[in-house]
Length: 276
Image 1 (cartoon, rainbow, N blue to C red):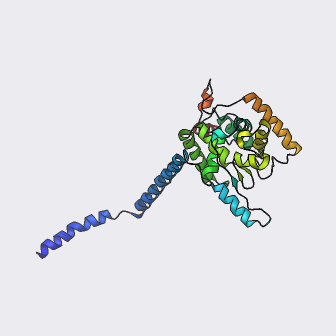
Image 2: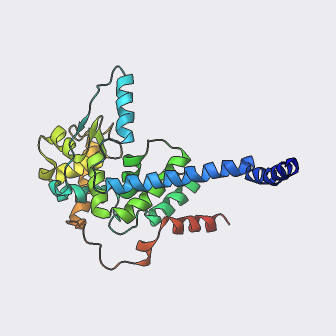
Image 3: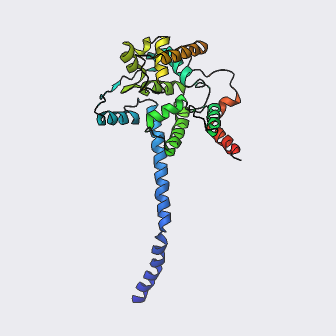
């Protein structure tokens, strides 16, 4: 009997040793599960926001704490989410004319603009970045505002997903409802009420152009108190709007080219060739 017990112990000991994985295997398993979980959460959040309006954004939270911390700054929060059907087509045309002329053609990334930005940066010139409306929507809806590389990487990931799952109309709707138009003023409905005293559906071409011009620096540019430079930029945007005409977000433009189908990966391959 004792011999049999000793034999059983010898037989089970190697099995127990085999089940003890090295620490790096356990670490890799934890890392792999974490990465998969984060990706799944990312996709779930994007899918949810296809139908559900974002209740808050990271920027809104950031601004609130900045307002509370600054004694000379008023704590303000103005926002009224509306459907894209309740937003003037002038507003859609204005932001496309001002912010992203190829919005209806690209797949989230304006590769030509990214290339131009890369060339200018290599020459040491300070130029405006190649951020599209899709990229700005991804950044504002899901991510904090900072200049760290991990944020830019996540922004690119979110942009690709929302382009595939949301479509242009939903991207524009979310963008126009969460974008910042002043300190504590979010979305074109709140901005229209604040600056012009009426709804976003009633925005004229000039009013829409004024709001669009304020977007690059919403905390510095006030559509309600336009400077000579601001009025000049408003005129430029209005001229562009006249060329674009009314934009149908449900219909992709005709006569698409190969450039229209370029993606972020095409840009990264191009950058790699430039470094050789």
